[in-house]
Length: 346
Image (cartoon, rainbow, N blue to C red):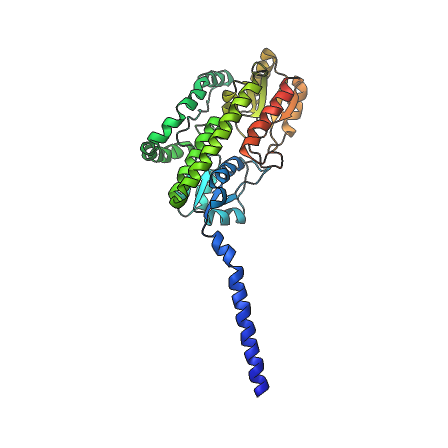
């Protein structure tokens, strides 16, 4: 009996030790849970959020590198990360609108386009689209006014939120939305995206407001310097026309005064009609286009015959990044300029 009591006593002590060990092993997880948890739909937004949030946030990337937001299907992990996030940063304008269907509280979905001048898609033919492109040549004037946004940012919030809900409903019947969603490819817009993310993080975690403000200033300075360097690098290719796989590069093109002659796909993942291709071929001949650029997230199988028929070279631009060579927003901007120069200076 005495032996049984001793054995029982040892068992109880051992159980307590295991229980205490388990509690201790959970402490880092509990500590992590005190961080602001965010998700972002695409890598550029995710990386900007990380640069602003630093070690004060836990960030999840929803669309993994190599996947296209135009064809992405959410997984169980995607849904779990969204559910566990305090806020979800999205591009909006039908690029990642599926996220709204996966959240119980839609108020935690933050479209990062606030105070950004968006380009409209055109339903007309290629020439009409190019006319619209030219009307946006003053886009970089937005840089001069960027700091003024800080002053009137709060006044804009209410109007933007009200208008955005209406705009989103209006876009629902439009295959690609009313506005071009690839606005992160403009460095100036990247700065505004960072500002918008910074404001949201300050709202969620006011105790670290100064930390987020400082990181934003560092990011802003970094992008301004890089933008100036890229503009200087672009001068040798500004007159060289080129075609892209789909219309994702207008913001980048405007930022650096590039000559985008057209796109192979009238909309993402949509096969061009014979009439559309005939018009594009005419443009290629007229403007003496030598290169077409695809993207690593897109299949180029449909391009083979078109490339051969028009004697085009091909390059690969990357709007999303996330690979080992493009593991920051800054590297994405630089990589694409390097590829453009390599192909267009030949």
